Structures are given as C-alpha cells and as structure tokens.
Image (tube, rainbow, N blue to C red; front, top):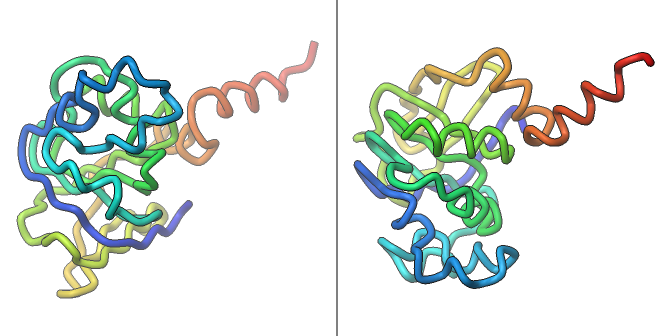
Length: 166
C-alpha cells in the first residue's frame, strides 16, 4: 500500500457525495455501491475504471452529505486513492476510516484523465508519469497514515486492542 500506481480519472472542483454516489441508489444493497460510483457525473465510470486507478478532484472533493456509501462505492469500484487539492472534512474522515487514501496535493490542474500516476506514501509524493512532475503529499501523517496502513479504523482499533494486556 505504500506505492500505488494507476490511471487518473479527473473530475474537477466541488464534486459532491451525491455526484460520487447518487441518492437514487441509496436504497440498493451496500454491497452493490461500486456499480454506481461517480454515477452523478459519469454513468459509465464504474464500468470503465480499473482496480488501482485514481479519482482526481480539485477543491472541496466530497462536499455535501456525510454519505459514507460514497467512499464505499469508490473502494468497491477499485479506486486505490482519491487525489485532490482539498477535501470536505467528513468525506476525508470517512475515506481514512474506510482505508481509502485521500491525498492532498497543492495542484491537480496538470493531471489529465488517463495519465498514469504513482502515489508513494513513503516518499510523500504523487508523480505524473507522463510528465515526470512530482507533487508533494501535504497530508497523511501520524494517526491518519497509521489508520490507512492498518486498512481502516476497525482493523486499526482491533490491532490496538489486541496489544493491550488485561
């Protein structure tokens, strides 16, 4: 999980949780959420995305409701990480808690849909392989990184509790 590589899917600024997982699908079983990932902005995304690909946003990615199913949909669709200039706070926490890296970089305007990206959590950079340009990762330190490395909040908590002595 330290180095991820895949194709970019660029969606721009102010992508909402309703764009990521539209409300019209909320009545469907949660294990089907991946079929509808990004359906609010691209109905074909879930059928075209490949495991390990990245969703790239601009500012305020994940705004709107506290819809945790938006993160679940992205993970089920095979998205390895979301890269953006900023995230809505609740989306960011939902992503980390569900083991989906939510990577903040200073600028995403140089990334195009289809670009191959490498996200290196150890060296703390995102590389656009087409251009060789490297963007520093501005977040994912401390407890957020520890939770991601564990696979999410539940495995992180279980591991911590198992290390306690009675």
